[in-house]
Image (cartoon, rainbow, N blue to C red; front, side):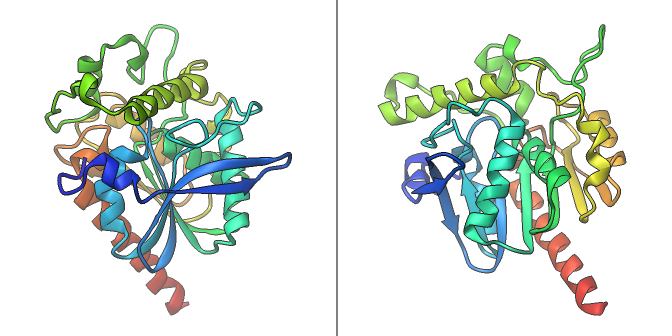
Length: 279
């Protein structure tokens, strides 16, 4: 987490927005920070609160829209939502509701999977895509795991698998009731959207060719949840994608290498903007 800002302080900046759905409304928790071109930030499995540092850095160059996915944090979960597809279609509706155009979409881990599912459906409002260690492709064969089954790990083992940065042990009894509720809701939502099949869509590999916007796939060289070969496979299936690795970095890129990842995102979007002006 950002050492200069507590999770409570960071989350204190969030808004609760009423987003129209096909039937009814959804209360969506979202942090909006910065000034500049729009950037939709899609968090990973441990919630938007774990991404405070990279969001603050990106807000120096972008207007960052960082929601808690439906079911995570303080965002409502509609009864009809049960798949990553549901989240992808929701975010397409959100982009339309906010009337955002030429958006940079950035997603990490589970959020990277959601981002990919968004783009295979409709990229009309998106200019660039950054996927940080995205999931969504096949995670296991009959006798081989391509992605570690973190549902089988205890919390200490999970942290060691997910990041290189040493973890400060959290005293759960010292946390406020709202923070404990967030942790529980985040874990429940990951189980809902990622339990079976385990963290993947069997048809996503057939659709990734539909992503035609320039894409960077970021991967930690020390990712122990989804090793680098998984990232190479993901990037190879993108028509305009390239893989960029980060040294001394695990799966939680936003924890291990927030500054380097943000710098890559800023440089990538600037380069694409310059190319567009040249043409």
